[in-house]
Length: 353
Image (tube, rainbow, N blue to C red; front, side, top):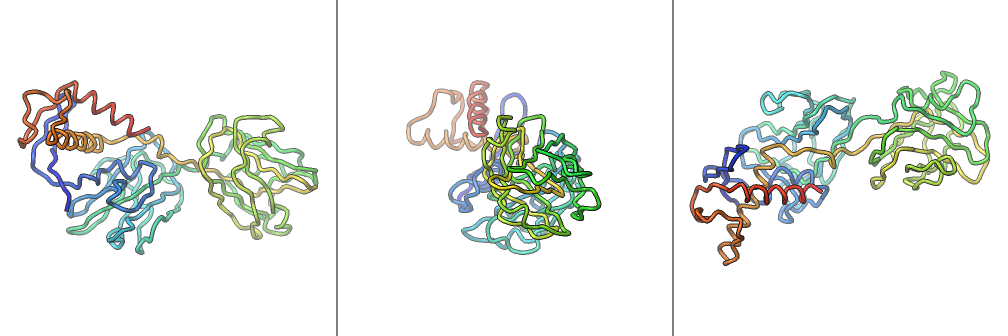
């Protein structure tokens, strides 16, 4: 079992460390938001707590967001059952380390790999994964946090407008698929019809949800392209192709996922035929992991990783000059110089890019 000692205290001045608690060297909290879903613990991209009472993990999003989806990647090389019973909690309080915030979902089965938990949007700055129980180990190989619907209420336009079916109907927050209820957008039977929403800012988009008409004509949406980008050339229809709709059953909502694309404009575009383009709702969410701010305890763990690596280098005769000359790396206590901290934080910034 690979473990090292780490300190429990962190100050804004020199970092004091002492040997009083064990933790897994490759299991720091930051690994769950490094963008790497590798589920083999030995590859160094999974978190790992000690075996403890009610272990938890928390991420600070840096601001309050409307969160509607959390994706978790479980450990894959062993011990999958450990995650069963874990709770996802979201809110703005740090009482009980954030574990008293609203419960939005619970892991009820053993996750084989990556699974997405969807729920009604909850506003919060902190996202916790909390595993109640005695002598439990919490391991997370990736946690992805998705903000709520960016398109809701945004300005939308379309190539033409069928009576009482304006483009804005597709972003009114109402998924009612019955056309006569006037919550669906629709063009006329245009050649190459299109619909576009302006998010006003550039976002990294990873998924788009479309609700199809429910009372007839489900096939009209077949072949529609989702295009995302920052250009209004050809009404935005020349932007990057993110996904293509194969089919959506009557009245159903389908989420199309794709590699992250940055853009201000999202277009739905049917090319090569005359068609009515009807959308009963279009919703977009963005991945928040790239904007996550690291908690102090996560920074402390990363700094300690650097400390351990420097100690190992010292053992091999390659001690960097930044190590304070007054410190014996083999001792149980050490004080890091300001110069060392600056170097460590530069390493932290590189790690977060």
